[in-house]
Length: 269
Image (cartoon, rainbow, N blue to C red; front, side, top):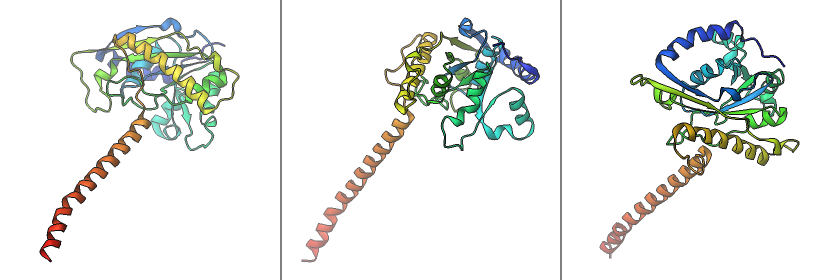
């Protein structure tokens, strides 16, 4: 299937975004040979900065296979932003649907048309204290197993040094380097033809995230934690700690009042 034309809106966005990116960030781009020359595929990318979608899109744009990002459907409805989202072929996600697969129907259709669909499997900027990839959500695995398309893992590092996670101020100096490394397709063949149960989707997602993490280890020259940071597990643990601290405070308050009660009882005799 031939490549889709990049089109006016994507080229217009590139004209606006590329010059400041070139000025602010040096480039260390590797693995472009793993980006399929034609046909539909998915890229699965780690997320550690509000700036990294631009840095990654710059890399992907230069391969000639522009990414179609998933975004909230409301962004497509009004004004210049809506026109740009529609014009660049970004993919609306209708989160109000109760059918998990239907929520990604547009992504499936895009892959089947021969597009590149970019997923951030973590769903948000990483909350890992050392900015390693977290556990992933199953959307990318759902689309991959439904279409049996290639899934290209992509790791990036450097945009987070320009704008750290959840920060609002750019750290411009010294000039940062955008490291982007694409790897060979993730091997998901053992999951093909099986019922897409929650356990199977979770396992397939873990395989995707493991490949992304290995690529990031190469970029950073460091070893990631054996167990990825899990926001849900951390929330549960935080609630447990809060409950234990509350119980301890209440127990301490009760102990502190007991001598006073005994003294008052002694004074009454």
